[in-house]
Image 1: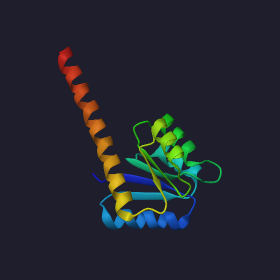
Image 2: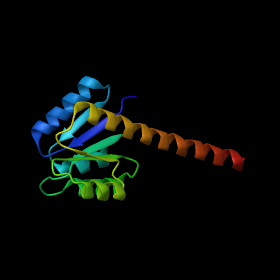
Image 3: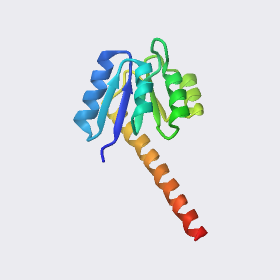
Length: 141
């Protein structure tokens, strides 16, 4: 099953670039939106393995998107991308649970490596929970 990625960024050029990078270099499915509210609605209504959100967007910023996703579906990792990065902002984002923080401009290899690593960690967490659940069921019988 292909991983499903949602990219939320108010810049259409960035959405097109990320879609192109993901589609040309992976088997993952990618959906995009330039509207953070629409992105949150999409997360609520569908299943995604990863969300990438821009930090600075009109209305709802990337950290608010992250916090809403954590409320709705806490197992979905979120990567924040921004042209306004600083070590303090990145550290604060990671402390709140953001999977990773990438500054623009980024290299194609950097974004692909980061996405792959975040998806692998999420997959391992799911497998771990499933194994724990099976062990608990087995110990009860």
